[in-house]
Image 1 (cartoon, one colour):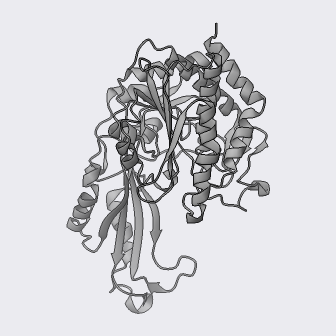
Image 2 (image 1 turned 180 degrees about the vertical axis):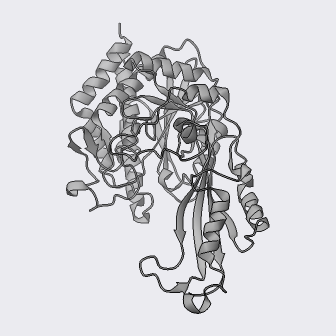
Image 3 (image 1 turned 90 degrees about the vertical axis):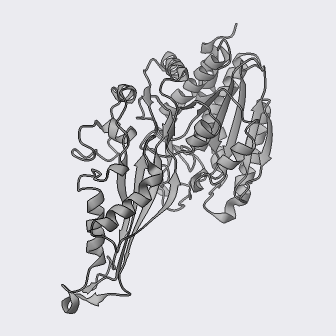
Length: 461
């Protein structure tokens, strides 16, 4: 009789034989840069030439959905085994950021996988081709171990526009709500807490970009002839920002802050240590909200970051007072923040406190969301991972960054469990993107265990 250990052994054998890396290499070879308009054919080919045949081998029925806004297509894959069994919905994205050819170490080609020591380099290895490939391989191992059965029903949606903000994912999911109906959402993206510790996160922080513009006059004016009698927009802008966030990253305006951290969230983060590796940046010793741990600041609090500032010519500064200054800030926020009020509140605050000349506008807003911390699926997933690895996984209320979790948690009403297979130092969105062999092998076994346990569930929900 097949056992959980058989499924894990099969997926481990697939990894150790080199089979998994060969699959990943083929997928990395598709230059699926969604930011580049001339890669539309590659986005479609990735779904049609690679993923559809792979899903067909697993007995999934698949079809493509065209983007309502003319962006990259979507793939929906559906496997129905028994209506009385649970149904899991899984997500991934086939698009990647720019390949940055010529910028990788040792002249590496981003469009093929290269193993150097513990690292497997290639664009998309971490974000996200490697991660959805792990989940597909684990499904296959469970199906093989159970003699052609999963023990549950499974659905996938793969998009090709995540790196440009998933512009119509919500619209597509809403239009296909019945087709995507499930009991549980399990997917993989983003990094673990660390390479050593398996992680579950339940959602993501949201983000608001806040543009501050001070446009006083055209061109510059000689600082000797006009200094002291002309207002300097750069000085005004710096002071305006300082009225919102101090020199230690602490927000001054209450509307920018989240509600108090709940006891449930504090308890989940009590054993979470944010500990960068040697090749990652060291944590600032005295930065961010007072009285919080590093984990609470990163996963349970808001931050206001200055992303960019500009005034004059920093490379060739002239002896002149600039005529304009501009900055882009970003509020990263957790569930419960009154984020829809932020832009108007910042504008009113600045205009009423000596900065009426600062123009305030907002762009690129994305929502914060998370699964209810009391969901029984959380303990179920954590227990499964512990049974496979012997490690207690970190359970984070949300990912520090952003993903389209709200589409699934709020739009489709599903409990969302994210099990990331990367790590913080993976260089996603940069040259030298990579995954670690050790993390990849462990991730394959984790997902085989999770999928096996889902097939052992006594009833739906």
